[in-house]
Length: 180
Ligand SMILES: Cc1cc2nc3c(=O)[nH]c(=O)nc-3n(C[C@H](O)[C@H](O)[C@H](O)COP(=O)(O)O)c2cc1C
Image (cartoon, rainbow, N blue to C red; front, side, top):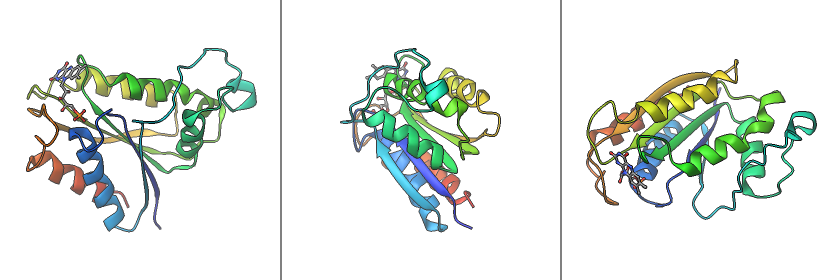
């Protein structure tokens, strides 16, 4: 049975390195028959969480913007994929803001079970994405029915297009194909 896969690409650079990694994962997941949707946070209207906790009783955010709609898509997906550039050894602020705005999910009967993490950075050392990965794992810990399912990191990529030919693209494609 195919799964509903939601790929959230958080770089402000559409077609940039982490976005290409997201595309490779999406292509692999699609190839094995999944229902795949990719969302770029770039260009979306996403306000910060107000910390009002209204969502914990209403199960919906009080802010009507794109994050409100993305959170609902997150809830209905079986698989979530987060793609981010590494910014100061962390995930992008755009992705962190979206995870915070996912707060209504906390009290919901969310469907997602598997979470994947894709990242790119200028520095080429496997330790570089670890803090960001830990951040995502912390988020996952708040959702006991979900688990961290895998990650791909592409190091040594700075400018848009640097990732072309990088082995990480093949790894992301293969990881996408493993979603069955
Ligand atoms: C604000 C900012 C902070 C960054 N911080 C880091 C960092 O801490 N370590 C690193 O190796 N690269 C860092 N980079 C480089 C990006 O991670 C790298 O260019 C990445 O491939 C960009 O991905 P994108 O094309 O998907 O936006 C930073 C870039 C920016 C713009």
